[in-house]
Length: 362
Image (cartoon, rainbow, N blue to C red; front, side, top):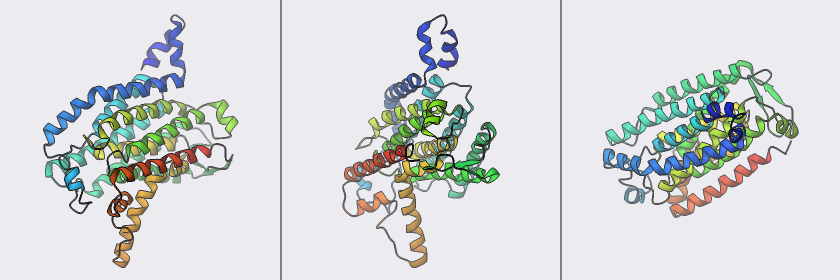
């Protein structure tokens, strides 16, 4: 909004020329989201505590320590992330850009699904929440609209095509088969982050790392000169998503202030589904869907651990891990919660750097 209002006045007021630069507006988005989080955080947490009273229901079959250390902690803290993220994005992004609205649609749509899930968990005092099929149908519907919108906006030969990392000019033309593929990426990313959100600070830092990486990728993909130099596919207008990614980093930092061990609030599905869906949508827009599997490798690992656990138990009656997702396996092995969280952060950092390395390994 500030760009749309102030940049046209740059001829009269020279300082407004700053709004032309994505880097300036991305920095502004980070700081704005961070400040909004700090200002609204105490009020949101106080409201959640007053309303929820007993906090998020804790799984009886989870690690025993959680029944003592996490009982009574309110959930739905993702509301804070969504407020800060939305306000910052609307202030600093170019609101004429289709991609900004596409990613906001997925983020807020998934956040709404997560909110209903959290609401049912709290109101019924049951950790199960919404029926899985109902959640999945809602997620697919939103992803379908977003993917179709992306395909309608993007020009040939990018529309309906899949870019392959490590190769300079390879584009796999999937045509309309790209639609279910993009839906799979968005839905998968949303649920992968959701599965990772199980310990204080565990999910939010890898999300910030992935957001920072995709801020760089979006900026480069949306810049004709840089994309040509790096020999990556140029996506007109995608650079504006760097502002959104910056806002997500700032909102994540603000939330981490309150989510750091011992957490004052959990993000719940309201936050984890929304942020995962956002990362999936950004990867679809920037044509870096496969790179998301590298950058978000920690989320992939957590998801695979659940799939392997369920498949093994159904087929053989035996469990591969002491508990799934993977972070609970290490808790069951005796690792302290901060040890698990920090080591997973280190893995996420390494994977983020590996994702950036794909820019040159071509």
